[in-house]
Length: 149
Image 1: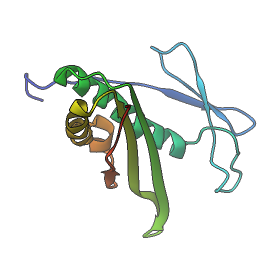
Image 2: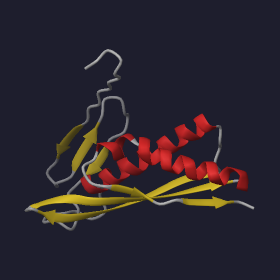
Image 3: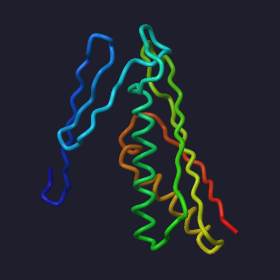
């Protein structure tokens, strides 16, 4: 690695208990989270976060954080930033994998002057989202800007 490159290291730990639910911890986070196989698979458990829902949450959360960081840079303060993520899992060449993710951000701004800037930031957030840039499947994004009048 070159000296001018930035590197961050992250670690988590998953420990499965007797009821097939894993407890996920990270040294720098006070709370833990539960994780289990989703109900679509054998022995899956409904009502518990799964690796699949974490995957989508990671992309959506990173997108929202990236959007806010870009708002700071562009000196725009939206009324709200939301992002829904949906993904498709399919059996491809004998293995399950995400074949695509769709991000549906909804950005609410307080005036029409911020509308074009909000759309520009939607595109830039998609381009610079660390998690989206790190996954193997295509990630698409829609442009939804609402103006309060």
